[in-house]
Amino acid sequence: MNAREVFEKRLRQAVRASAREVQEYAQENHRFTSKTGQLDRAIDVRQVSDFTAEVYIDSNAANYGPFVHNGTKAHIIRPKVKKALRWVPQGGNAFIFARRVRHPGTKADPFLYKALEAKQEDIKGIFSKAVNVALDDIANSVISETKSINIKIKL
Image 1 (cartoon, one colour):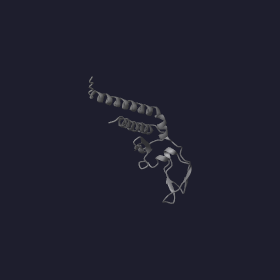
Image 2: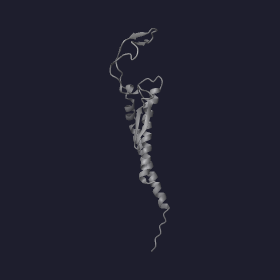
Image 3: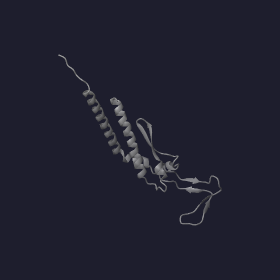
C-alpha cells in the first residue's frame, strides 16, 4: 500500500468515527422528551462518499423527526377522514370534539447542529490521531522496505 492509500484509509476511518461521535451525542443530548425512543433511534449515519459522512434523521423510522428538529409555525389542524377531531383532555374522562384546532406551533430543537458544535474539539482530535497513525504507518512501511534492500558498494 502506498502512502496515499494509507493516508486515505485513515481519513475514511476518521470521517466514520467523527460521524458516530456526533450521532451518539445527538441521541443522548436533546430537549425533546422521548416516550418511545423512536426518534433517538432514527438519528442515523450514512457514508455519502469516501470522505463525507452524514448524520441525519431517518424519516422512515420517525416521520415527525424533522418537525421536532426544525420546529413548526402556528397552524390549523383539520380532520382528514372524519367530520371532527376527538381527544381526551389531560386529567379528563370525556371526549372533546372540534372541527378544527389552532395549534400554536412547536419550538425547534436543533439537536443535530448542537451535537456537531459540541463535538468540534473531539472531531479535531480524531483527525489529528488519524493523521499521526497514517504517518506512523508510512514511516514503518518505509523502514521495513529499506531493511530488505541490500546495498552493495563496489570500489
